[in-house]
Length: 69
Image (tube, rainbow, N blue to C red; front, side, top):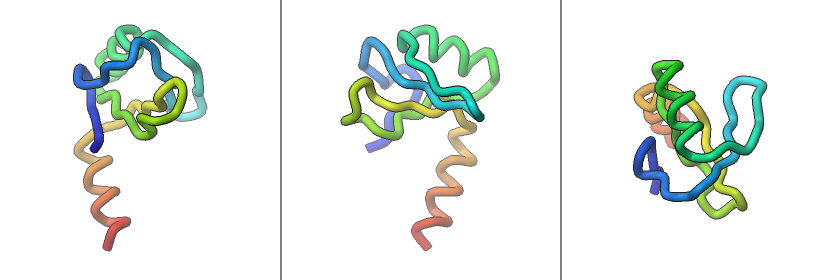
């Protein structure tokens, strides 16, 4: 199950955005995503810390559905 934005419950997450890869507090990661006008999407919830990507969620879902076909 994919979690987005406020549904992410981990205290900190690894954030991937373009060529940036760093660990942030979840609140700071959410603030950065909102500042960019994008969403924070959890892509690897079982990693330590969970891995999230800053993306346009609508486009992300569209790309995921295309990959399944």
